[in-house]
Image (cartoon, rainbow, N blue to C red; front, side, top):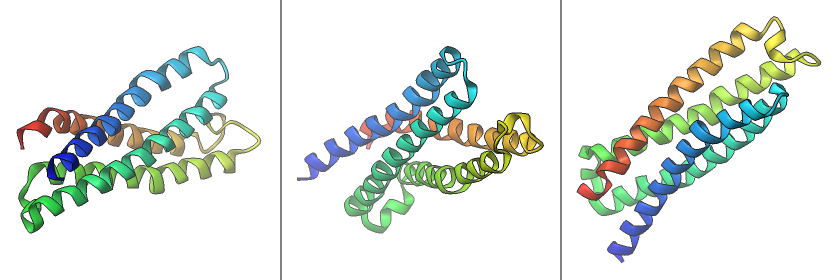
Length: 151
């Protein structure tokens, strides 16, 4: 049973980190390059990032529980446990903190595009914070992928 849970953990890390990379660094840039309507591209990108967030929440919760079930309180001393926890916290901050703020600014700007409104600077700031957190999460994901089989 322990081996099965470890295999599942490896698959979930692959799904989580793979979705971060494929959506954030492949699909969304291609979307903005290929779609002339930037407002539509932004809406579609937002939907993709929401799906990535839900994948991250499921994977992150399993991995936290997995580490605790294997190591008990000793999990609190494991680097991998804290990497997963920080990645999960970033997911939650992005999905339930920053993304709703950006969506609210878009609604306030209607019927105009938020980027052509008085709210553009606030939107750009939230987008920048979101991008930095996403990059940090992606880099932590690299660490997870490299380190998963060393434990």
